[in-house]
Length: 332
Image (cartoon, rainbow, N blue to C red; front, side):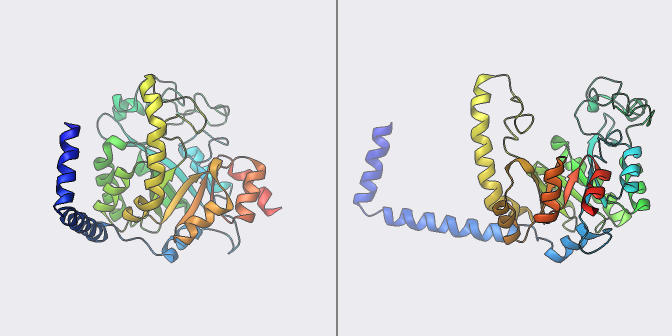
């Protein structure tokens, strides 16, 4: 079969058919470029993004501090107590994670299971809303005695709280397989509460951002990324997979995704912000994104040296688990 194909190609070339083949390739390339330009989503202006990020800061030069999951070192993560404390400690915004219960109710929890943070066990998607509300979201936190009986909150509950407190919201969509549902819910929430200058939707998954932008192009969005996301559970953590062939293949997918993400995916989706892990960060990397007109937000910054460097030298917004420490140190 291979020999036959080679003979066919050589015959085509000998008869000058390669010219038509080249013309066909050029036509396909031009058509692809036209479709790309027509279908890509509009990107918000740098001024719009800057106004969102800077909203709530004390002065023009104040650091932008975002409570990661509300500030998980200072209170049980993704709880009402954490968001209130983040505001008290001076955060300008909070990041929290969106998932869905068995009956389709949007709730705020990071993991796909309730095991790590609550007194229950099982997948979030296996609980009804009434069942998941009975769990104690502070049960395994070191400060559980100070913040007892915290519940996994409803999305609406958190939005109402953040609007009341004046906190900017960074909504991280974890339910990649429920991208359409997330887009529908967030479209309605943004429209009903006019969250366009108060909230941003973030995700590791481009299909989530695509669905959000398609549902409402006016919603600010951000792509989240770290190296080895497909391969490992954490940056330098264990593999996500047990099968040897998946462990071998996944790093290749990571490299392919990294190439496409940094070359055209961000542009096609029209994101205005890029959420980057700090492990692979440098001045050059920050400059690369800023030259593209994209603001960069760093996570999760808990090291005292990194906090000072990223906020004072690189002038980047940071997500942190310890809001109070940040503000005390940067003000010193």
